[in-house]
Amino acid sequence: MTSLIHLSDLAGEPDLHQSLQGGAISIGNFDGVHLGHRVLLERVRRHADRVGGKAIAVVMDPHPASVLRPHGAPPKLTTLPRRAELMSELGIDHLLVCEATREFLNQTAEEFFQRLIVEQLSGKAIIEGPNFFFGRDRAGNTTRLKELAEERQIDVEIVVPSVRDERLVSSSRVREAIASGDISLANQMLGSRYCLTGTVTTGAQRGRTLGFPTANLDGVETLIPEHGVYAALAAFEGTHDRPVHPAAVHIGPNPTFDERQETKIEAHLLDYDGDLYGKTVTLTLLSQVRSVQKFADASALKLQLQIDLQTVRETVSSLPSHP
Image (cartoon, rainbow, N blue to C red):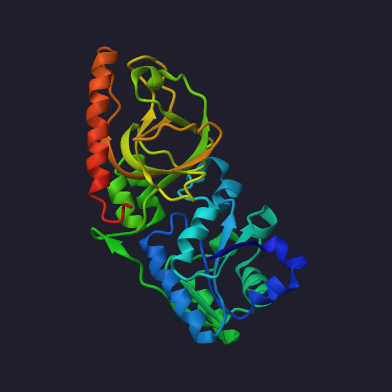
């Protein structure tokens, strides 16, 4: 399992600090841990085995853009724990988090390299993509990285980026797909399934009166897809985080009953009748079923919901990995 470590904690943990020394390193945001990230991180694992050290991914949190350009920061695809979870599948030993303060981001490329790579990590190998930049004003690029590494006899590999449909796979492309509701495409580029995690709170309970009780999710930290109904799998406390319940997820307003355009996330778990209030629920999204619609009355809505649930059942049953 990939351990999640904050750089600020290393001062009081000499043994932990020592375990980070002499490994293979990659620095990036790794939001989504998509196919491009996966290729790169697999190379980190191989280099770590070669040099006899740990495989280390380094991220800055919060995203540097949220510090330098607060209104221009991209929405998150994954929380840090989710990134660590996905990285564990790739053999990454540590996910090291550097706090992205203005002081930290104001380091020159040379200062950043010396303090983090050389002094903190004693890196033996560095693996990056061709669009890697580091230091104040993104002054450091892969050419400068190779120069600094060569001076200290540190190996460098620049990994060829992954391409899908003749376009680079990137976190931005994944965000575009999710924002447009194309969860199937997003999942293909991620190499995993996109998740929403939140806490179940009390809603209007209108779904229960219709015979389709829903869990209303609040506190979701990651990008919320376009309004629509989605097929999903739900996991919650007590299920060991395994997505065992098929779910129909409604994202957006309820125009049949409410003219307000308030975005809500409501999940109806099929074949489940337990109490989820206050629990943390993770919804693993599979595909979009339909867009949000306004129906003539409750009867028309109930008929459509029955069709939606059948679509969800068929979608989930077609998954080879579903339990």
